[in-house]
Amino acid sequence: MNAVESTAALLGVQGLTRRFGGLVAVSEVTLDLHVGEVHAVIGTNGAGKSTLINMLSGEIEASAGRIALDGRDITALPQPRRALGGVGRSYQRTTIFGEFTVLENCRLAAQAATPRAWAFWESSARCQASNAAAHEALEAAGLSTEAHRIAGTLSHGAKRQLEVAMCLATRPRVLLLDEPLAGMGAEETDRMLALLQRLKARHAILLVEHDMDAVFRVADRITVMVNGAVIATGTPEAIRTNPDVRAAYLGDEH
Ligand SMILES: Nc1ncnc2c1ncn2[C@@H]1O[C@H](COP(=O)(O)OP(=O)(O)OP(=O)(O)O)[C@@H](O)[C@H]1O
Image 1 (cartoon, rainbow, N blue to C red):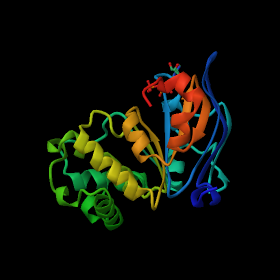
Image 2: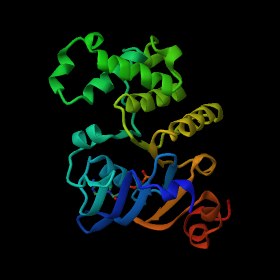
Image 3: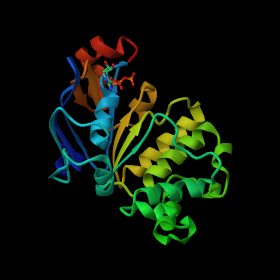
Image 4: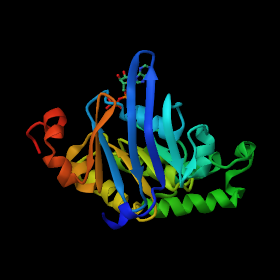
């Protein structure tokens, strides 16, 4: 058992299941997320990865199973209350306001995560707490030098970094990242992987990603899903050599 496994899970998932009518999109998934670890979830199209992440963030309800944050059952909590509790996520689709600056985007994300929804109508510059959270998030995401740039003018890679920064501005402890590397070139991918390596020191990270080379470079643990069910969980090395995984998913590439 390594040091990370011996600590209690920050997010613990047991027997999580989601049915859509007769289809079981996610079937009895059990996994743990720990601070200090990037836990990747891989699987072919339709394996259930997005449905899993949507249940963890609270955007869709589980049909069965349990999700615990720091040992507390959060399965029945709706998305905004989970976000307040420290579960943050990024999306496949872009959520950036292109006309606003990088800093303003982060400030709005921080404000949207505060319990006082009406505070949205206050001048964002006056809201010191969200200002501080926004600056902190930009610093953590390596975007401080771009703070006053119009977000729409950023490169694709920097926009994805901004999305992670917007998630960080909500001060999450758990980061659920849905394909943060989509559409990135080699250099942008390197930058994002370096960012994830830095962030894992203070966050538990779940990474859903199709770029297998990147997954095998950055993940501490990999869970493989096929048809909604987990067929294997382990270190990249164990997954690479697992015969079931090779047969079901990786082919002979790895
Ligand atoms: N709202 C829904 N209603 C009905 N079926 C759904 C719904 N959402 C997802 N599904 C089905 O559930 C299964 C799992 O889908 P999901 O999007 O979670 O897979 P995925 O692993 O994220 O795929 P991809 O890699 O293509 O994003 C698929 O068969 C999909 O068609």
